[in-house]
Amino acid sequence: MEQPMILEVADLRVGYGKVEALHHVSLKVRAGEIVTVIGPNGAGKTTLLSAIMGLLPRRSGSVTFLGSAPGEIEVERMVAMGMTLVPEKRELFGEMSVEDNLLLGAFMRRRLGHRDDAATMAEVYGIFPRLKERREQLAGTLSGGERQMLAVGRALMAKPKLLMLDEPSLGLAPLIVREIFHVLGRLRKTGVAILLVEQNARAALQVADYGYVLETGEIALAGSSAELRDNPRVVESYLGFGGKH
Amino acid sequence: MDLQIALLLGQDGIVNGAIYALLALALVLVFAVTRVIFIPQGEFVAFGALTLASFQAGKVPGTLWLLVGMGVAIAAIEIGIALRNGTLRRLTSALGWNLAYPAVAAAVVLLGQPGSWSLALQVVLALALVVPLGPMVYRLAYQPLQSASVLVLLIVSVAVHLTLVGLGLLFFGAEGSRTPAFSDASFDWGGVMVTGQTLWVVGASAALIVVLYLFFERSLWGKALRATAINRTGARLMGISTTQAGKLSFVLAAAIGALSGILIAPITTVYYDTGFIIGLKGFVGAIVGGMASYPIAAAGAILVGLLESFSSFWASAFKEVIVFTLIIPVLIWRSLTTRHVEEEE
Ligand SMILES: Nc1ncnc2c1ncn2[C@@H]1O[C@H](COP(=O)(O)OP(=O)(O)OP(=O)(O)O)[C@@H](O)[C@H]1O
Ligand SMILES: [Mg+2]
Image (cartoon, rainbow over all chains, first blue to last red; front, top):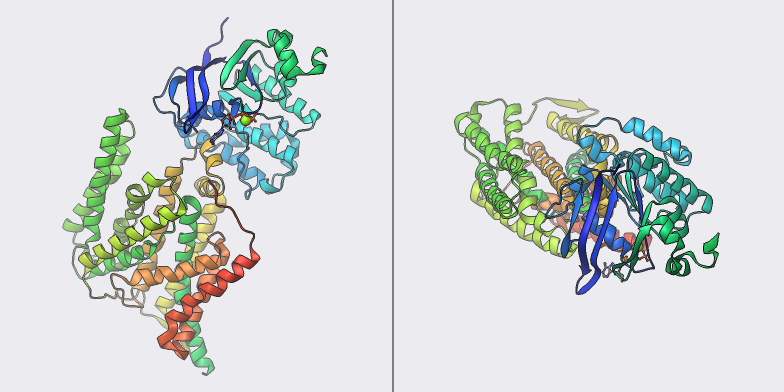
């Protein structure tokens, strides 16, 4: 049975000043699906996620989230509807404790009248016990890996319907990368849709159902993860010499 | 100088310092959340005091008309925006606050004869008129410039300050006013007379500081304001609207300002432009705290109060000079001891 559509991006164009960073990008994410976007540095992956979230204005095209396509995308409204982004720069609240960072992850849910943040926090601590040990510590003093965990944990506090992650594996030890991707796999089973931007194409294509290859602001290739893994171009450019493993 | 005089001056210094501390906290808060250097902070002090004085004189304060006027202007803007974008959903709350609320306030002031009310109720009514002016000023002057540089926002602040001082003169005239003390009690503590109003000022300031502390440490919105101050993008990604956070910080700043004015009105004569100097002294305190640290800003402001009162004894003609000259060594000290922080975005 087809899962319901969560996100549909059609013909999206985004630019900075005179330069256009995304030209006519289209993609779809369904409930319970992990979709990955891979591509080289500067391809426009971060730009894509920022525009979907409303952090950047669009030039044209549409972003349909849960069936509604707002004329002007506002970040706060997207958050309220259930979209969450783990941004590339993480944007943690450095001078606040780990626990306060997590609590603020549930800010919108609290405002909308949900009072389940304590239970969600317990779940997040279950996923990342390290965060629980460090709950009183200031976020700015965490190690790089702990900071990534906090960024993902904070996003989970919002109980998103669509979770977007911008290179969650950046600078992490392989073991923790596996742990985070394992978490994504579990989340998918609960019906969350996931849009995953990754440099680590191998890991991304392992966990994802579907993938897009973004090159210089355009979708160069799209297909199921299995198809992409076997595509010679993908193997050569993104999976490197060890692609056959 | 004997001990008697020193204690008296110290008491004076602490009373004024407590007020400066409140204003310093408000300045730090507004700057951290919105990057606005809120020069008009002092006008809220004067408006608070003079609105209360108007009630006591049985007059209708001009701040009522300012509330009504700004409300109408904002309502017109919001209606225009809603019509252009076809988004009518948010209009109800905007119209409620900007048209209905001022209308109710006008009805109460014009028909309720607040001149005959008790002092406590008059204080509440004065706050009800003056505090909403804070978020209204934010909506009209600063919100459209949310992403402007600190310098542009500072220039806007100067303009808002001059406008409000001018309106203050228009509303309240050039004469100063004093209001009766909250309490007539006075105590003899080891030979030093401490008046009830002194205790009111110090007690209310301390209580307000504790309330603010709890707000920032415990409440969700307090944490949201801190989050916005630390990382605006991060806060937006949590669904904390920069505009809402800005508005809330202006509500708090206006409330602190108006309350400060109401507290000092029985001690000093307040003129339409008195707030500026008082605000500037709070500003010196805020600068001591680097516009970032609440406790250091408060301590700096109390220091300003003490310095002012002692210098008024030794060299009263130079008292303002001495206080404002304090900024220079403080800035030198700060620039030597703190790392240079790049301005964000
Ligand atoms: N604020 C900006 N102003 C101007 N150009 C920008 C800005 N941000 C990004 N760009 C440009 O837009 C293009 C796409 O950038 P983007 O950050 O989306 O790439 P990316 O795919 O996320 O790269 P990476 O893998 O290195 O994170 C790049 O050429 C970049 O230089
Ligand atoms: Mg990127």
